[in-house]
Amino acid sequence: MRNVLFYALCVLALCCGSAFAQATGSSEKASTASTSGSETTGIHTPLFVGGALGFGSGTGVGTERGLGLQQIEPMAGIWFPHVAFFRAGYGFYDFTGESDDGEKTEIEHVNLDVELGVHLLGDVYLVGNFSRVKELSDVGDVSWNEWGVGIGSVINILSKTMLFAEIGYRNVLDHYDPFLDKNISGSRLQMNLGFVAYVY
Image (cartoon, rainbow, N blue to C red; front, side, top):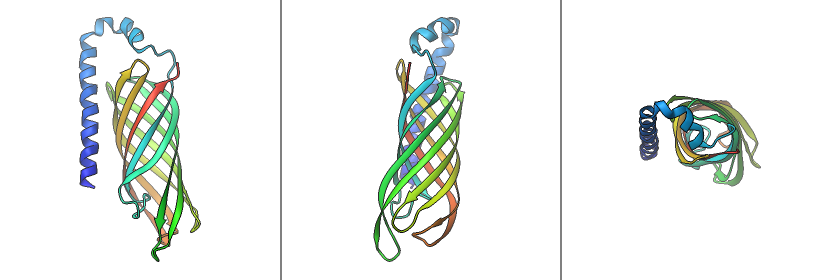
């Protein structure tokens, strides 16, 4: 757990450092920002498509998986550089679960995410999210809601493409777990690594 948090913070620190450097460089060229901005970005509309890998740990992830890949998520939305963004994604990931009696079962994990972010300093942003999660299996189907907040940053790669990294806290609302045969609730951590490409 500590190792994953360490690596997540290192990636986030790298992104924040890059964002700070870009913000510093931008302030030195404030006199020409209005003309150079459109020329360098080449972005005509804030619409984007992208994808992310989500890594998590804690309530709702499942003790049988421990710590690791939580979801593969295509996404789309609107992202105004250095201002704010809205994105929606559909995550999925299948894994094998094990009940108390040792019986293994294939589990289909899916989630619908809606996220709203606001840039705080240059490429660094604060993001809030809501997730509707479902896990389908022969043992039983279960669904629950999650609310979360996190911090992240982007790194511009090309004129219309950027990478992002973020780490956040998720509040897992009460739901019944058929593997544990009881209601559970709690919290977990999630780290997302992804990319964004503007449509036009």
